[in-house]
Image (cartoon, rainbow, N blue to C red; front, side):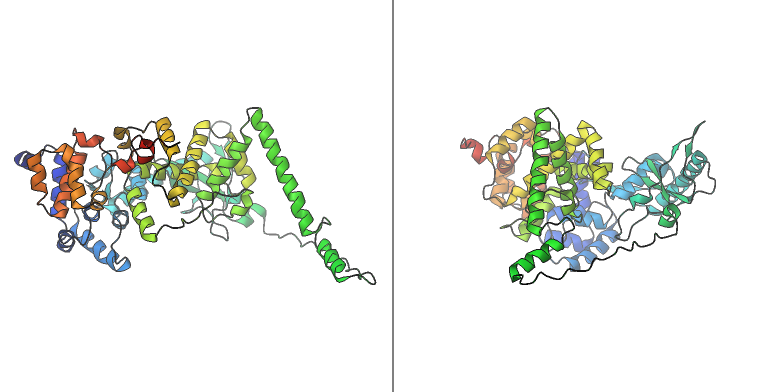
Length: 492
């Protein structure tokens, strides 16, 4: 590959590798790419692996599902390129151990420099290594708890709603002389592998009957008072009011109960204000924690959080096609991956996974300031995302936020965003040439003006991503902050 790069005068070997991968696409996919039926981003996704049979099977399977063609992210997911589980398992056994056992890893040459995205080729080899190492971990765990017959379960226990049943979590305590002492009874263990490849051990009661016993408490038999006869001559309105009051255990009508509920909330509101005046963070913590629990878990009972959530579950005035296009581009950016990784980190915290909301909030109160800041940033980001339905492309206050975050310069924007072929394909050929003009000489630009659309996109992308090139500092004007339209007009 180095010789080819030298022969054609291309200093970036990675670019040459990408060209070769695209040229070796399975024939039907290559023909679709050449005809313009699929974008360069989609073609690059298929070329993330050298396995032409896998490319073709994926191409044929996804096309009927989505007639307008799948997104690059969907293509990679279908081929298990960058598969999160495989990455965890690879980290668990060790890359060198996997390779020494004959395992192969198909690198995605189109991944950003900041990541090592690829596909585990020999899944059977990896699974055998995982099983072998898990056997050693199980032996260590059994020795730690002094239970040679301890059973291990493949999944954490679930409740009737298919959520993890945290009530069955068993807590151990350190044993004198080392090890861990588990509660007496039928306890099982579960091994999870975290993002860093480390085994995470948890202990559970084998069943609800194992923890609580098989006897069910006798149902309480409450005496039902007889409904008193209405007073003689009672009006229809008075009778309705009396019936409404009788329905409330506390003797209040629904309107009265609502009024006292409002008073109770304003008392809590004032208490949080006074706490803030003293330097406390109860109100801030409650706000961020509740918003995070609701916004990052749409299936949760939001009404149990006691707070209204950031409005706008869907964006009005924005087409589904526009939203889909935006999601595709976001998923391919370093910024999108930063957000996704942080969301994953937050949603794995105890204050998020704990089903008892009172306990969960108290856990959040005790968490580190750094984790709280991450949670707040995620909540702010979701609220920012909800502003997509506004008419203006940019907002003046965003410039101030960008300046405080240190991304007002184009070079800093490139830390979070990288141009892609799909992005360039949104622009006309004339605009793509204009983008490349500052970075190439006039003869080169004139030659590109005669090139096919796909070839022009590939050439311009190479200029904008070439190591050491000036294109690495370029960001499209609509992505800039210091020079965006509202900044230029001096809006306040």
